[in-house]
Image (cartoon, rainbow, N blue to C red; front, side, top):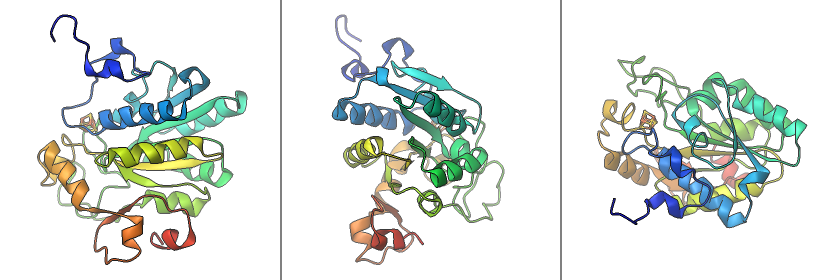
Length: 263
Ligand code: SF4
C-alpha cells in the first residue's frame, strides 16, 4: 500500500480496521456479505451502538466478530439464536442480529431456528449458506445438495437438502427471503428490509466456499462459483412465469403466489 493511501475497507462505516485482514479464504463470499450488511445498516441510518450482533462457530461467525465496531456476542456452535433470544428479552430496545452459516444455524442450531420462527421473536437472522461445513473441514450439512461431494459424503450426498426459506416460512415468520452475494445490490436492499422488519426475519444468503465446496464439486475457482450462482438462480417474478428447471428461486416470498413456489 502506498504511503498515505487508505485500505479499501476504511471507506465502509462500522468496520474495525485493526481486525483486518479477515480470516476468510481468497474468493470466499463472506466478505461480500459483511460489506452488504454494513451498507444496509448505513442505508437505514442506524448507529451500531444501538445494535447487538450474535454469532456462533464457523466461518460466517467471523463476519461480525471481530470485524464490526459494535457489541458482538460470539457464542457456542449452533446456539446464536438462543443467546440472541435471551439478549432481546433482557434488552428489548436493542436491534439484535444473528449471523451464521448453514451448519451453525440450520444443522446444530436448527431447533432454535424453527422455534424462534414459530414464536416470531423480533430478531434478524442472516444465514450465509455455503452448503457445507467450511471451518471444520468440509463436512455435509442439511443444505448440501443431493449428490454433492463433501469429506463425509465421498460418494455424493445421498440425502435431499432443506430449502431453508421453505422450512422457516413453514414454521411461521412473515419475512423469509433468499438472495446471493453475486447479486449484491439486490442483497443490500433485501437486508435493509429484513433489518427493518418487526418480528422474526430470516434471510438466506447463498455464499460461495471455494475452499471446501467448490473444489470438490467442479467449481474450482471463485469465479466458477460466482458464475454458478448467476446461472443457477432465478428471481421470484420470473419463476412465476417460466419453467425454472433445477434453478434456485431468489427474492422475496411475500405473498401466497410466491410462497407456493417453495411448497
Ligand atoms: S472455508 Fe469456505 S466458507 Fe470458510 S473462509 Fe474459506 S472459503 Fe470461506
